[in-house]
Image (cartoon, rainbow, N blue to C red):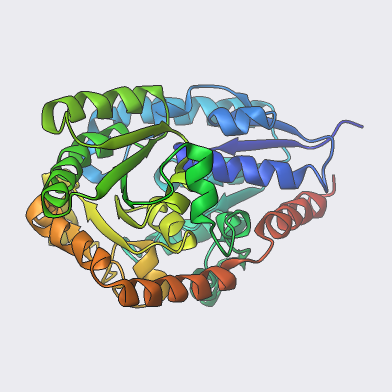
Length: 385
């Protein structure tokens, strides 16, 4: 008898990594599983047959989605029709809730078990998505404990599995080893720049981040900068902006290698998103900058869609603003630069935050891959395969 057919959809780089981690874990209870859907290079390396390029789905924001909506709806209909015609044993939406929950709802109505891997950030904005989860998903796999508690209280079948990145990152990052691996000088102060993994983020944040680096280099001549970029297209986009904004900046550029870069640097200037969690797991003090499309920001504020006090996951997990946040017009060199410099000039404060991040990291290490795979395998088994 052939193994279970597992459908997955990821829409961006971080989801691709999460999906690949889950696929590896699923091969233990389901060694003959066949994987089908949408993903990137990491999921393809684990055996996914990707139906369309993942980049077609990677759109964020309220206003930004509008221009791409017809294409996104067309792709979602095509996936739904294909899987209803040839039903998989389970569908797993990897993050990307705005795309995946609508797809899951239709598949579930056709009798296909559905899983959402990574809860939507209902606790931060658009709390109405809890009801959407209850209608769309047989199971929600949560990366953070408070999510499962709230969803369970609202009648959603949710399980806390921990965060796979917490299992993969060392509890004690070795800065010297990381610098040697990357070919970086082992002495000197290094600032990491993480302007995001999406083209829109890189377009919005590379300029302010590079201007901040220039400001910092005028304050401290001993500083150098390192930036990890997710692939050739993003690297080329960033380089074009660098040539215009800061062609002479002492900058080390890497394609990929974000974990090594985070281990190697002393402080991080980062976009909001998964990068703030990765910086926390690397135990690095950070400053967070972010810019949404202006109309998206106005709509989110006017409609009171934003509920959380902070945007950075590092701050949400800590329950306090350990990482200063600068959003929209505040995301400029005049504010970002002094905030980064403050970390460099107060090593006692930086060490205290590093210790706090280490405590949070330990709490997130749950063996998440095995727990998530066990929950999915149980759902497949309950269907009577």
